[in-house]
Length: 128
Image (tube, rainbow, N blue to C red; front, side, top):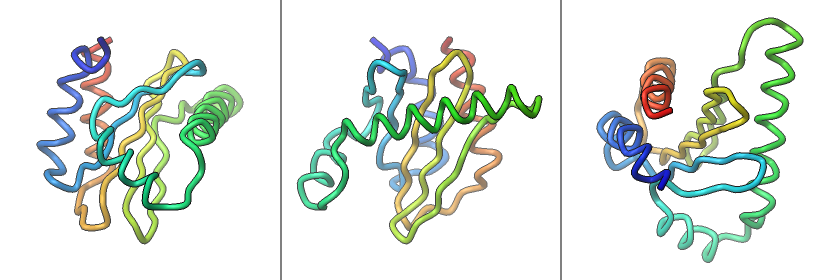
């Protein structure tokens, strides 16, 4: 259901990033679900010795909770966090309501991250 609900987000991010878009996941405390790129992810975890998908989910939830706490403590909502590695760009989106999204771009991506975050959060807001 969420894949259809967030089709606008998938289209927006694909339009902005092209072939650099690898995955989009939506997560809550209870679960994670792929909106885009599940096949790529399955190939990746099969080839690379990495954390389990369950551990990745736990880490994402922890980061979401920390962003929510930080927003309450400092009075400024954390909208996104970005991690840039030699393999690509990971963008966590925090639209509120204890829901998060994670976008993974490859190392060839060339994007204006603040504008991409604004556009993605606007799409998520329209889908809510």
